[in-house]
Amino acid sequence: MKRFILEKFLRVTKNREKLEKSLNVKISNRGKEIVMEGPPLDEYVAEKVLDALDFGFPFSVAMSIKEEEYVFEIISIKKYTKKSDLEKVRARIIGSGGKTLRALTELTKCNFEIKGNEIGIIGDAEEIKPAQQALISLIRGSKTANVYAYLEKHHPLPVFDLGLKEARKKK
Image (cartoon, rainbow, N blue to C red; front, side, top):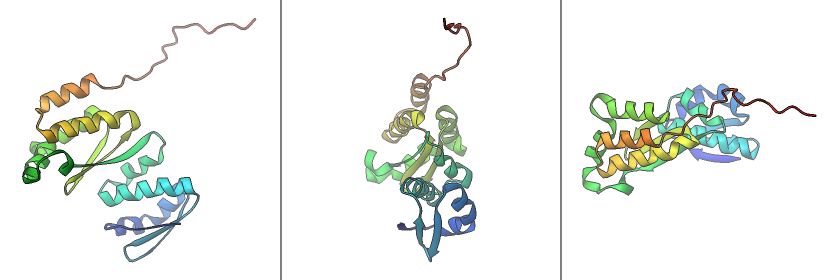
């Protein structure tokens, strides 16, 4: 059984039945305190999903954590920059009209959410590391073009079976 407090607990209580069914846990609440019961592995996954919901991710994106390949990570902006220019750093990450964040999403195939001085990332385990490095580079002041070039260079290639190799015949 795990207990924790969520700021956006209404998102959990409204979707309680869906969450309980898909995450295989029993969820109850008393005010902002959420109590979760279930098998330990299911509790761990449910905790990550609820953390993502509390961070501000849409329900469908938060539920993608349930798939084993997806990971939820949080980067603190304060850890990588001076404390005086946090507003400018957040503006650099978002870009004008959200263009930089959209480009990062397309290049990394990860979902990003900014909450205060933290950035949440949900994505494939292979894509998370380059996404984190790109965000850290932007926070430290790298040009966006250089960050995009880095992401294009470090993009993991998909594995395709073209069927060119003949299967071995057993004797």
